[in-house]
Image (cartoon, rainbow, N blue to C red; front, side):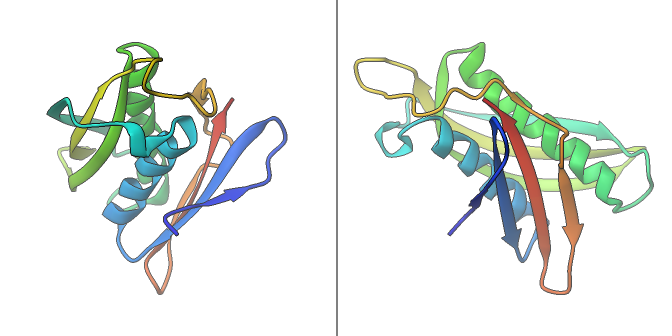
Length: 150
């Protein structure tokens, strides 16, 4: 299972675990659109590269840098739907790197324009929150929690 839903009053929380940091970001992106829509009905009508960067405020490899990056990344993906009217069916993180006082993520996204005749929205997600947001390194890899405002 790529993610697990968690109980949260009036919002939707997810818990993720993966061997790699990249895997955490991939699975969080999948969860966002899997919760939002019936992802199996979204075809590939476009493909493009995106990049997101957060200031590296805590130093190399600190959790809060990755939390900030995860929030920004998911917010950019959510904007694909809320502002650009696109649904995504695949998000592949290519690289997460640190340098020059920032943490940068690059990814390839694919999807198609939302069409109410072909796509159903399961849960309207308004925002990605910082509430209970965490990314932690463990012996087995990484665990993360994210809460979506619905």
